[in-house]
Image 1 (cartoon, one colour):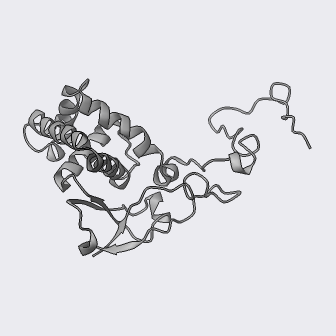
Image 2 (tube, one colour):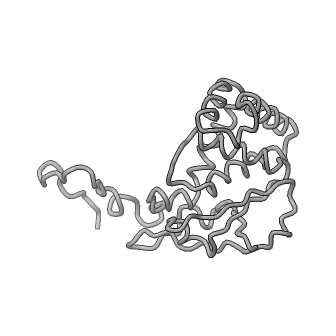
Image 3 (cartoon, one colour):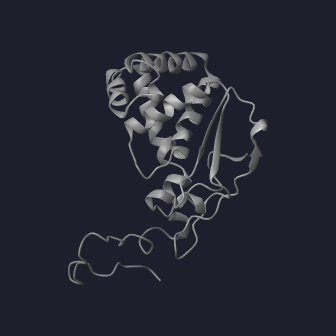
Length: 212
């Protein structure tokens, strides 16, 4: 089986790769790697659903995230916790896997961070009455709720903000066309793109002043 290694967006690709005038995010150059070359302590593997908007970004439906410190089971638990904290039906597991990847990177750089994550995942399993990742949705919510206020809960929730939303895959799913500052700003590129409100009359919303 051939799989896609999901990588973090670099400064060269993040937010600035949109073509005018469609706003479509260009296809990413995600390298294909063989399964046996993923030598980390754990690997998260999945397949993009048919019809997913992310198929436009990837050369294959299969994806994989390598974990260097956390095990596959621990990575899967973090992935599922991220979905409980920030549930989006339209976001596939490939996006939530970035949360596990980022927290695994923190664990690889700091033994205390690794201990915090492992003890927190163990607490999730205990609260779920077994393996958290395989528990029912109701049990998962209850288990996560029981850890609210703990350092583990705060760490995972805090990392969700950037891991889940600051990447090209999330941009594609939610329809964000990317940054506009390098294209002259949003004044003439999306500023008036309100689709759910009626357009104001000319007196209420005169044309913007633009210096020639």
